[in-house]
Length: 176
Image (cartoon, rainbow, N blue to C red; front, side, top):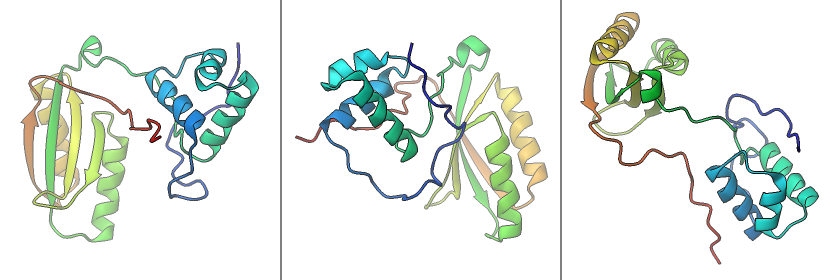
């Protein structure tokens, strides 16, 4: 069994160079397959990309070092964990003073309920995807957030009725 180097638990966004990297067809095949199943063997990856296992392993190491592969993690089923309520939440803040925004950002980053958080343009300042066990659990989460951050002016919540698509997969198909 091939062992890979330990991958940090957070994206490699602070690695050298933040712009796009050049990818050839083999890189794109490796990335596409890894997105579908990160546990695939190096031998299967290599065969699909038309590479030797050692070449495929070197390419994957390079893609990790360049931050293209930001991390590898297991995707858990929230319903099986009792987290059956998904909400999309818009947050509006009063002002953008760094001394108030930084603690809010830190809270959002720490909160396990927050699956994704974006600072956005438009009527809301932030959009969150939140997963909770119940609407009552969400009420406790959002009430606590509002109490800890007085610069939060308003929130709007939409409850997801059905998940049509949930993916972190990026389009890396060969452009040829």
